[in-house]
Amino acid sequence: MPYTHHLRVYPSAEPLDRTDQLAWKLAELATDPVEVTPEVVDMVVNRVIDNAAVAAASLTRGPAVAARGQALAHPYTPGSTVFGCDLETRTSPEWAAWANGVAVRELDFHDTFLAAEYSHPGDNIPPILAVAQHAGSDGAAVVRAIATGYEIQVDLVRAISLHRHKIDHVAHLGPSAAAGIGTLLGLDTETVFQAIGQALHTTTATRQSRKGQISTWKAHAPAFAGKVAVEAVDRAMRGQTSPEPIYEGEDGVVAWLLDGPDAAYDVVLPAPGEPKTAILDTYTKEHSAEYQSQALIDLARALHDEHPWLADPENVTSIVIHTSHHTHYVIGSGANDPQKYDPTASRETLDHSIPYIFAVALQDGGWHHVDSYAPERAARPDTVALWAKVTTAEDPEWTRRYHSTDPAEKAFGGRVEIELADGGRLVREIAVADAHPLGARPFRREQYVHKFRTLAAGVLEDAEIERFLDLAQRLPELTPAEVRELTIVGRPGLLDSVPTPTGLFELGRDDAPAHPEVEGDGFTMHEADATTEGEAR
Image 1 (tube, one colour):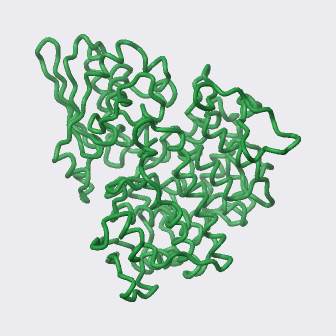
Image 2 (cartoon, one colour):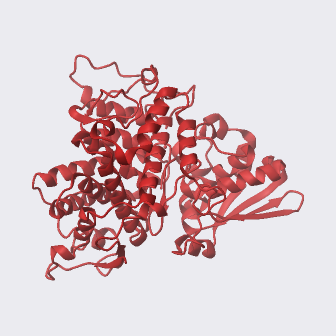
Image 3 (cartoon, rainbow, N blue to C red):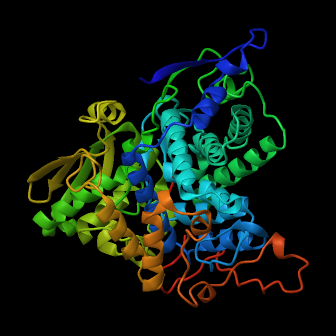
């Protein structure tokens, strides 16, 4: 049976034994050698495929290209592979975690878990896999490590809200990735404890990265947490220590970044010897958009099929989406961000505008990870007109269901009320996305493989698609040599088709490439074939 760890603040004058600290409990969880259940093994494989799928689709996008360029400036042996590059190209593991983490996160298209906090637990995979390749770990070790990363992140996300205090959700990712790497390497509890503390201390940041004019840093934030986790483990292995107690201290995370000196949380964790199954409670995305939009895209798709005339703004007076607090205030009109109605807004911003997303999905009857964000798509006059008629409103019942611990009533959707120009009215609601485990068409291995094939088409050669799928689906039995090949290699000429921006790391090198021309306020690329800019949750 799971047990509950009570977390509170301890004044400096009140002793707190190390073994009673949350970071220690997480380290004990990471070092528990419990076997991974078959169901968890299967889902780990699914998520490795999912990560590679969304990374493939982002290989030529600006943030992924820039991060890859930084990583390639740090070659290393044995090192780790970088998505898109050939199998022989190796960088130091923390930089591979960085580049691959950006590629995975860029399109806002991988898995999610929502509770007291928000998260994308698949962000644990790039740093764990990078270290596995460098260290020569086998596939079974990778599976155990990923199970740990997911378990700890989900457990923290269930218990501790960060966004309530405008702290970015990657503050739960640093500790979970560090713990997962600890599992991977078979480190002792003390070393993992120190790594978790360092990773948490260095990954707290504000949520402005997910507010207003959302920037390309959105894709980099979790990759940074993964990179920091690798570095924290390295320091801890060298005997370096962390601030302590990191969560509970008088000047620690809880007292000064979260609910204050009188705060208390109950963190539910697996008991010793109990399997780590949290990954089974997470879910991936069918659409490349913020998770709260997934169910509403499915609803808009259904409305389009049933009432195609709704695409014409002349037929619609208003559309009000009654939904949860989070959806209303983060991606809805309750955010009070004018950018959410701006046809010239960045992709990252449109990704966090449910008025925009619902309008486009209603008109198009679906969602595309590139086309739906294209500047010309956002600027279409009929879309702008319909978009302006879409607002959100918080409904206490949808907020309650959002936070429910009962899977049967937990919901991430809403009720849509459409007032028609002829005086009529349409009302429809949806609780969870079609791809959700409780949705109309839950994702299983077949759907994960299909997603990979779809997003990799034209990016990877057919033989490379099959090579990767073969390795990924044999993950638990892979040898260290095979783990080192668990990556995706872009088709010939793909990476050369986009310029790599240069930066500090190239200064002073005789072989440094010329700096590309900069357009507007930053580096962009692939305007013609629609490969630029990333989430913000």
